[in-house]
Image 1 (tube, rainbow, N blue to C red):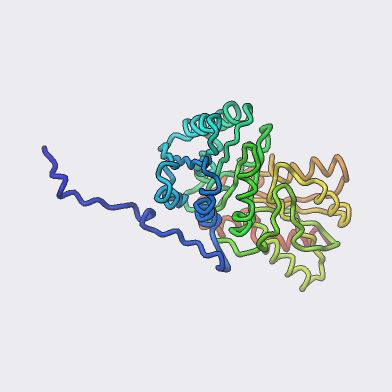
Image 2 (image 1 turned 90 degrees about the vertical axis):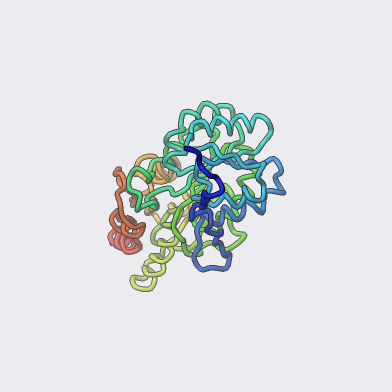
Length: 334
């Protein structure tokens, strides 16, 4: 049967039609949208920069980059392992490749390629993992990842960055691109309250967002905003003084800032959207044991896979809500 091409109606995906909705003045913003917007503005500064997508151009909003720089965007398809090999080859040819996928697939499926082709050869490849942690909640456990930090921090030469909000994503991205090492950038799905002041984020240096004397809370990602609110509540209602540290650069790890705080307060609480094994809790505990043995407790996904629901429902179910943080601190202080 011969098809009359003139009668075929072509429709773009609804995600392609959706404009990049990033407002730097908004009270809440998506890390993904902030990243997609910033990478376009940085393209001229880095003429060797090439974006590579594993069939997620619309999900990651990198179609905006493709529209402006069509010769610097490569659509690989659903072939994450091949994507990492191509990224390694581009890096060897002097390009600055950024490979994109959902964190669970871009890290889990490609660990061998990242280890052998990128990290072992010390190639300057940047890997962006979308929808890390529990935040891709409606898609269920297969699309959530609480193991990515453990995998990536275990690799020699690999840096790992997990911003707290959209502003921190924008501030750290130029520093990541100037850093000549393989880097994993962990980005989250939901709109996150604006928490970090512009220009205050330094790659490799943890942030003290609130000074305190009774307990040190250590967090990253979207849980930083929840810890900020929990600290305010604890001070107002219980007169508990919280020192809050945002570990946005997980590797290299700024042990000096954390250890100094733990020595001051004498007790720590690590809050993370990650498994209990191999996350920032493991890293903090290791360095604390070496330098300043301290009592440390943890809120995490407790060695469980994810499940289906809305993002806030899952954070509540796994004990990572603001109320869970408040209760844990109250119990520790008592």
